Amino acid sequence: MAWSRPSNAVAGTQIPAATTNAILGDLDLLGNASATYGTAATVWTAGTNPTIGNGTFVSTFRRDNKWVDFFIQITMGTTTTFGVGTWALALPVTARFSSAVNFTARATDTSASANYDIMGDASTTGIALRCAATTAGGANRVVSSANPFTWASTDILSVVGRYEVA
Image (cartoon, rainbow, N blue to C red; front, side, top):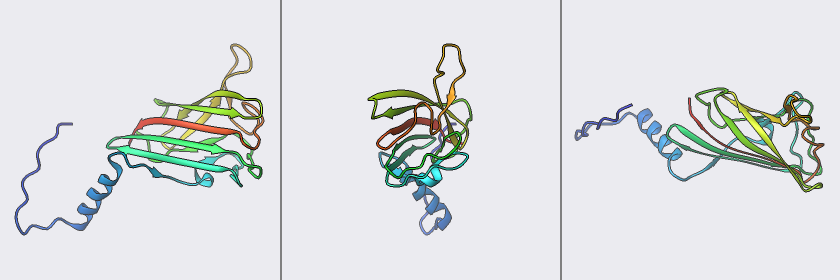
């Protein structure tokens, strides 16, 4: 898309409030400022949703025109429940493409001092999480309360990514 210079403002002309608010909203999303989005209850889901309890949940994103950079980190607490079914995470802004974007994620089993690489497959609104197969040539497994390990207090799920906005 080619940019063209807007015409000069004419003295006495008023910009409609809706236009001014839209411009100010776009400016808020530019630059280095980050914003939080959602809560654990709205971002971290499963067939039966997990609950964060006394764990910690961080979700930040920065939008730069047509691109979004985001970070999610869930640290499990002693009262965290892990839900039933496949875990998924919501994106802060609708993505332009589904399945064309993959995100980097890591599961940390703190009791075993082990890290597991997780793949995040995107839809336009969320991320399906998958971990490596347990046997060579096997299918990737979905991330859940039991995969890639049985989650417990102090374990960490982190996801970072960049994608184009719809």
